Image (tube, rainbow, N blue to C red):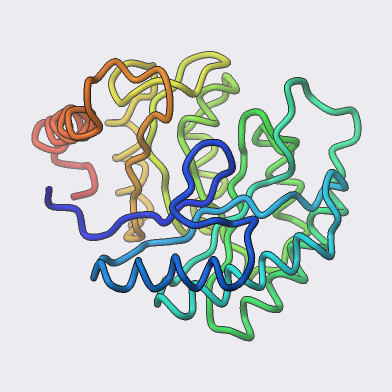
Length: 249
């Protein structure tokens, strides 16, 4: 379909290309399957547990090390981790200091292995769910830690995607595209209110040349097949590129 790479995903209950909570041997088996496919991956986007006190930090760190080994084995350049545990309602204590300390330890281990590390923030539905909190987290993080920038999480929080990009673009290591509207990230491309043309222009203005990931819906998709969903998203985004000469190509 013309894509240069895929994302290897290990998000519990959503998409499990790789078993992020499993044993090293199970991860090695997933690695063998991936290498046999001859695909290229932009990142491993995984949820091995959280560093905000919800899970045992040592256990999470051990799973992070397993994922780093998988990334090295499969020549995947980047591991993306979440900003805390998913919650139904905002928590009173975001534990940002605790998370940054653990992510900095993970950064040390990633650096040793030659794998890049990113945290996805803001992330709607997790403790670091808005621009101010993401800014606070980034201020305490090792500069080695990059940002996974998902437009849908910012839009769902009723914040400006363009303002967030202007603040964070120098730290962005990968971009996730998905649509959203207020308090709802479950919108296929074109069905929400994200202004993708404006966002493409913002990326062009900062000369962003990293990977851009098209994220699909794990539930509530209006399309009969994932292929239909991808084709519709690509057609929608290609029209923006065709009509606006300032956007990233």
